[in-house]
Amino acid sequence: MKYPIDGLEAFIEIVDLGSFNKAAQKMHLTQTALTRRIQRLEAQLGLRLLDRTTRSVSLTTVGRDFLPEARQLLEDVQRSFERLRNMSRLSDGDVVIASVPSLMFGRLPRVLHSYALAHPANRVEVLDRDSSRVLEAVRQRHAQFGLHVHLPNDQDLHHETVCLDPFVAYCRKDHPLAGRAAVSWAELARFELITLGGTSGNRQRMEAQLAIAGIDIRTRFVVEYYSTALGLASEGLGVAILVSFGADVRPALVQVPLIDPVIHRPLSLVRRRGETLTPAAQVLYRQILAQLSAPAAA
Image (tube, rainbow, N blue to C red; front, side, top):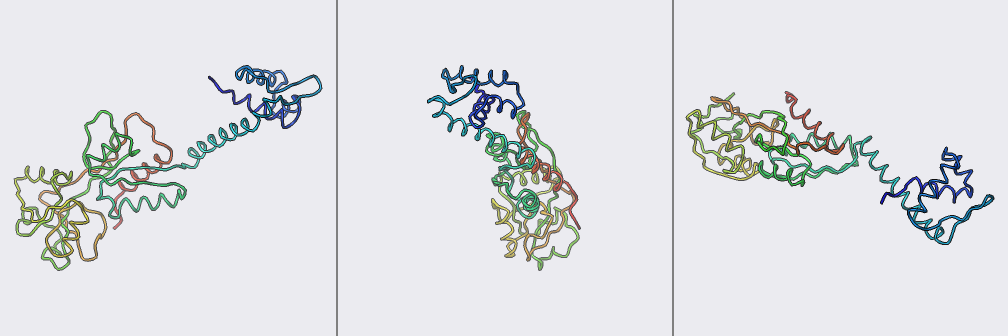
């Protein structure tokens, strides 16, 4: 059944103004057009709402009972339309994204900070996931879009490469590597190393590239989280092999570029193919793309 919103508007205006003629003038309708709206509304309800003569109009008992509900229905519709207009005009609304944890060290928080300043009414939920779970969160609609490491081959997902992050060595400021401008992967064989676990997309990419180059490195500590790797490195337990965060993440640590070969991790935005993001999510998506793909400030 189609609900005649225009009929509700006509019904309320007639009651408030007490006249078909006055209501027609206010709504910029002919009296005939206004009458048709009321007739369609009553026909759909199967009930008479108004008693009218050539000189007066009054509510029927049913009409009197229905009037508060009609007002509420119209207010709900108007409120819903206003909310949608604000979503479009002001990019209002909540956003849920999924992200690999490494981005939470400085880079993504900076984007979220500028987004929060521009859209203070919007709530952002960040789901910390490894790359495979980022894809699953987007696919299952737990997140509107995600940031992950691998380039997906899935036909149901659309990806957009944001940037390429180089692998670096994080070590204490008193470590022998701390003063180096760069260090080769082969040289790492002399040091205790800290790397992420086998399910990490970063580790898989690192090992694949080193295998191509014929370089074998030995890991002393294998951990799951970036914060754990950085914590161990801060205590002098080894050199953490991670992607560059583009900023100093721990006061006690320095990052040294890794070369021969230089290995990059591709970072991609991913969303469901063929689906339109909400205005609020679209603004954040574009902001992440613009800020993370821009060269880091010196």
